[in-house]
Length: 216
Image (cartoon, rainbow, N blue to C red; front, side, top):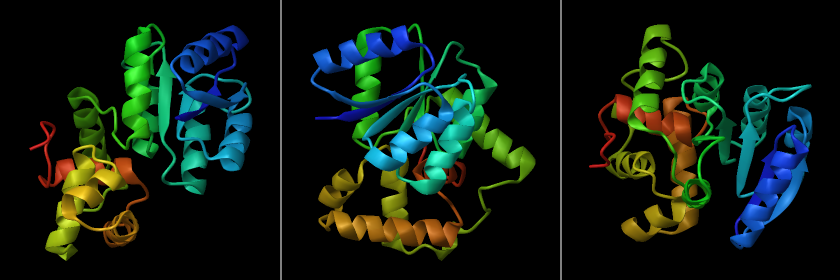
């Protein structure tokens, strides 16, 4: 059962989401009406997926996402937005959100997104990923340059699989190693590359040609 935290300042919207998700066999473990509540709930409950509205009072979704990922870099956040080109979504993805879903998306799209992110995938469409990569390049920030030579062959393979959207469990199965070993190797990779989370690692792998947007 996928455990979901809802963060949106509109009670009716949250209630609609709760009804939909629970009808699909998911469990809503908390509802937050602002960013500060979302941070507190996330820290207390460690949900499988967090649906985070961009615009909320007190503390917006981007800043809340940044704080949550500082506390738990493995947190899986999906941003909820009205607009595909929302600059705030862009900033959230840079911070480590797994992607975004539009508020007018149909139920099947939303459920699929939650299942995919809960399984370790990122919802980075090619345009968004390329825009983020271009921004990192232009500002020369966050993602280091030419560091992957420090990775050994196994670490490079793990990084490639991560960038292709595989969960830790999937990577472990493919490489015939334990999930704990995958987690340890990822921590070493993050340290070597000076990265903070899986989204940054996936973007780094795409930029450096370790993986590509087609997943080959």
